[in-house]
Amino acid sequence: MGLELVEEQGFWCRQGTVDANAVFALPDDEYDLWRHRWSGWAIDVGAQIGTIGITLARNNPELRVVCVEAVPESSDLLERNIAAAGLGDRVVSVRAIAGRPGQ
Image (cartoon, rainbow, N blue to C red; front, side, top):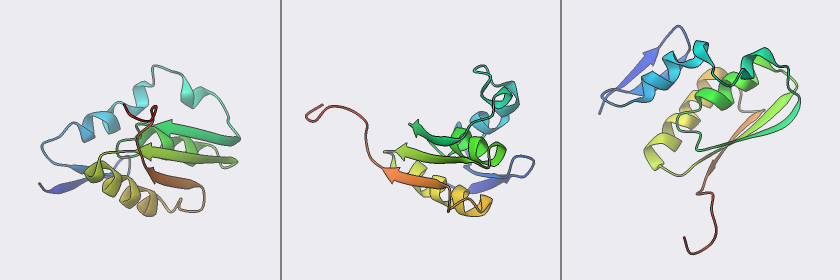
C-alpha cells in the first residue's frame, strides 16, 4: 500500500484507506477543539495517524500531547507525521491498547 502526502494539512496517509478522510475533516471540527486554547497535557486515545493530536499541538504551543495507537501501520504513520511536523518534543506516540487487562 502506497503513501501520499496531503500537502495542505501536512499529513502522510495510506492510499486506499480512510486516512485522508480524517485529514480532510479537520476544518469541520464537530467538537470545537480548534476554537479553544489549550495548555498542559492532552491524551488522544485511538490516535490513528495523528490528525487530532498533531493539530492540537500545532495550534497550542503550550500543549503536550500523548497519542495512543494500537494498530502498527497507523502507529508507523503517526510517528512519521509527528516527525514531519517537527513536534517530537511535544507529541509522544505510545503503541498500546486502552482497556482493562484481559479484554
